[in-house]
Image (cartoon, rainbow, N blue to C red; front, top):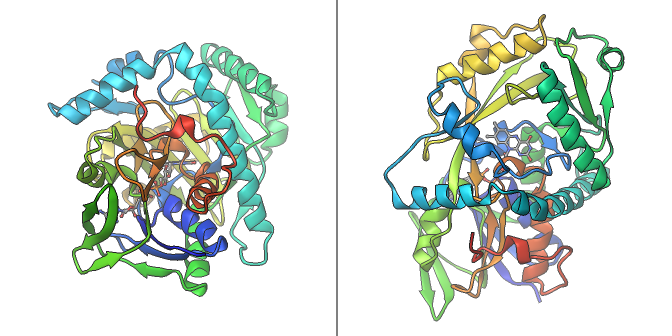
Amino acid sequence: MGKNVIIIGGGVIGLCSAYYLYKEGHQVSIVDQSNLDSGASYVNAGYLSPSHIIPLSAPGVMKKGLKWMFNPASPLYIRPRLDLDFLRWVWAFNKSCSKEHMSKAIPVIKNIALLSQDLFEDLKNSDSFKFHYDKKGLLMLCQTNKMLEAEIKTAQLAKQEGLEVREVTLNELQQLEQNVKINAVGATFYECDSHMTPQEFMQEMKDYLKSVEVQFFKKEKVEDLHIQNKKIISIKTDKQKLKGDEFILATGSWTPFLSKKLGLNLLLEAGKGYCVNTENSTGITIPAILTEAKVAVTPMHDFTRFAGTMEIAGINHDINKVRVEAIARAVTNYYPDIILTSDEKNLASSGLRPVSPDGLPYIGKSEKCQNLIFATGHAMMGLSMATGTGKLVSEIISQKKASLSLEPFNPDRRF
Ligand SMILES: Cc1cc2nc3c(=O)[nH]c(=O)nc-3n(C[C@H](O)[C@H](O)[C@H](O)COP(=O)(O)OP(=O)(O)OC[C@H]3O[C@@H](n4cnc5c(N)ncnc54)[C@H](O)[C@@H]3O)c2cc1C
């Protein structure tokens, strides 16, 4: 029998969870504090990228983060704060930056990304959706031989994992991208990756869910959870009290506020990123990562998006112009004929990635509560893992065998 499920948070994870829960016959409501039209799920680079198998917490990242801390234009920035939760996150992140953790995380990340990619393709092939989706692969453009060598090593790892990836020569690169000049010494090419226009997907998913009578409560903040005997009886928003059988916490970077109400100190930090769009024709047809600058480039529906930076600096959407300029500079550096205009840079927007310390999301129940499922912490892979996460959430609620082992995603895990 269908259950009454309330999803807190209507980003891409909340919407995809709603979709699969509805398909399993549950009655679903979504509560979100925002107008459901901005934030990470709208400004992301649109990659569905099984290629991103290396977790953020990889060997050497912490050292790089410390080095970059004093550079206002660097792609990774961790702002030190005297806050116990932040310090515990840094400690756990640092501990996860090991080879051993990376080897364990790689197949887990790959499997949920591949599951999600298949599910996105099913959605795209169904009659209900027509959002822009392309499978053109992802180029890792390198400007230095040192970076190219490192990328070739990563590509070998990915190949061992069964992903389609190869090195491309400069000649081939020019063949692949005939209408744009590229300044690089070489590249690797992940043919396994696909991409989309995220705001189109979000809009279509909201329209679909409304059409099947999923209830939306927007601009409504969940402030408290009423818990009895390890079960949530109701949630209190700033407007009303809502009762349900099961609850999903898909609150992205804000999750620690509500998880504390359960007595669970979930380690999670907001990782701010920016995007700048241009509607001018760029000639770019294949998504690319400008590896030295860590900027993502995506040809979307009628525009090109440039996205980047990871600023661990608390919850705020402030736009740091120095970092936006750094993204724009990198673009011209790799694509000498593309110059982003002041108007385009002034329209830069930001989003907060929910970053767990070990590069794996939190999906599943905590010992602390019997009828709440965590679905958060996807960091830079939230879109790539969204449909898989939604499917896993619906399988847990429907008491079906999960498509993947849930153990690595346990919200109670220790670091
Ligand atoms: C610049 C950038 C580029 C990126 N590129 C990619 C990419 O190419 N591929 C990829 O896979 N991922 C990418 N990501 C990451 C991806 O966008 C995120 O992981 C994903 O959007 C997270 O989705 P979410 O639903 O968990 O969180 P969000 O989208 O943040 O949604 C959480 C929602 O919860 C709501 N909420 C929070 N607290 C409450 C409360 N108390 N009451 C009610 N509502 C609440 C918020 O209003 C919000 O709408 C990128 C992110 C950024 C910023």
